[in-house]
Length: 396
Ligand code: SF4
Image 1 (spheres, rainbow, N blue to C red):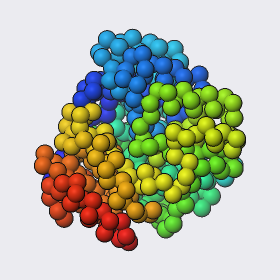
Image 2 (image 1 turned 135 degrees about the vertical axis):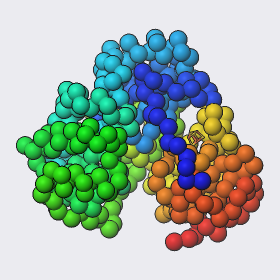
Image 3 (image 1 turned 90 degrees about the horizontal axis):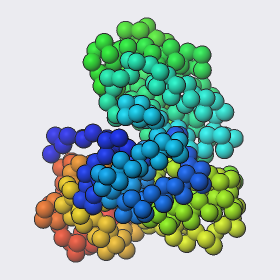
Image 4 (image 1 turned 90 degrees about the vertical axis):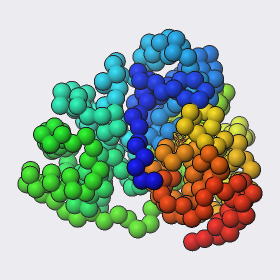
């Protein structure tokens, strides 16, 4: 079951056919939207699509239910709102995930945005980047209240014990870097990929090879053992909102735009946890936030899922419908339950404590694995799953 091919990434210029029409991905630069841009997206989702917008794990927006003709109408409008690159090549290269609180949280390193801008400038200008796939990506993690430790791209720039480091994929040997040498290092890495025909750099071996061939100075990197995540709800620099199952309706997005104008700084920040931060939003907004998750104990925060059938053509079970029946049996406040519409596991490439993977006959039940891993039980129906969820909710 481990031979599932992970597909290409849809983009604005290369939309993807799904069970409810074409899916159109919008990548707001550094995952930030002004209230005006949010209203534009909400209006477009309603006028040109079916009104539904998924938040992605790359902090992008995926508008659903478009026709081919509507996509052609949409592209120039998105350009006009400065929400995309001018062409498909540049749009495909612009995969930079940055700490969502850069520039907002004083404990997030002050150079975080500058690193992101340097990288963005280089990948747009550098001709070598042409050969990279649309999946080649970057993480810029300045630490602070919303660290990106769990997120791994091909190239990761992280603050680590007050020192910036460059990490390739999941490597344990990393390269110290600073604003002066990071672009030079990036150029070397791109040449390295070009020379060896490497399209991704996630495997540890690539890092070792790169460091050896370029005689880079290196240091060991150990992951922090406990990482505190920013809680849902009010925090000193704004409001952190959970979005039920990462799915917004156009009216929800319009409402958030209005709230950010009235109570915040007229911007919305998307996060890779499929949540939204309203920077500097005051607690007075609370009464208007009923359609969102504002309680950190809400069990929906511990469930990750994809749209499944009928929204995705590969979906084998109606995940969005089934989760409503299963949610009351998942009592765990700590463990993540991943429900996947098929073995591709788009919603979470990570191993999760429990994964339910849809099959033509029900769901496979997988402990501590990914959607395409070996299952403990096969083809369970909802009743059988409910009974098991109660037991496994308590597992450590
Ligand atoms: S995991 Fe979900 S979204 Fe991905 S292909 Fe399968 S059904 Fe579709």
